[in-house]
Length: 196
Image (cartoon, rainbow, N blue to C red; front, side, top):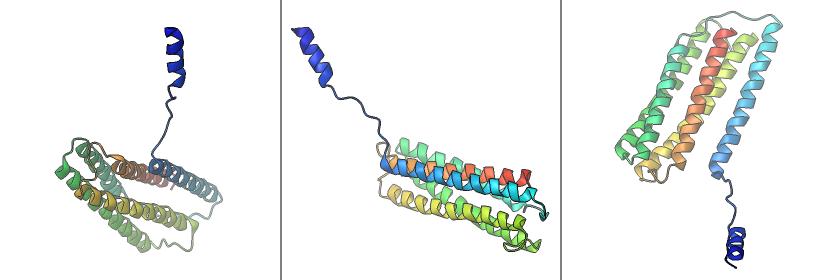
C-alpha cells in the first residue's frame, strides 16, 4: 500500500517548467532582429564593394578611441551588476552613471568621426562607400541612444532602491543590451577596417 501511495505522490508532483522573464525574451528577440539587420547590411556592403566604383578614404581615427571608450563602458556596466549583487548601492549608482557618461562620450566621438569624414569629402549621398559608413555608424548610434534610455531607467530604479541582490532583472536586461551594443560596435569597426 505504501508503494501505491509513493507512486501516486510522484504522479501528482507537477513537472518543472522552463520559463524566461518576458522582458528578457523580448530583449533577445530584439537583439536577434538587430543581428539580422546588420548581417544583411554587411552582406550588401560586400556585394556592392565588389561591383567597383568604390571610394577610398581614411576611417576616422576617433572611431578607434570611441571603441576603447565603449569597451570601458562595458566594464563599468559589469561593475554595476556586481555592485547590485552585493547590495552596494553607492557603487551601483556610480557605475551606472559612469556607464551613461561613457555612452554619451562615445556618441560625441562618433559625431566627431562624421565631421572628419565630411572633411575628407565623404558624404552620405554620393559614393556608396560613404553611404554605408554613415548608415552603419548612424544605426549603431541610434541603438546606443536607446541603450542610454534603458540606462536612465536603471539609474532611476537604482536611486529608488528597486535594484538589489533579490531584484536584478532590470539591471540584467540593461547590462545584456549594453554589452551587445559594445560587441556590435566592435564587429562593425573591425569589419569596416578590414573590408575598407
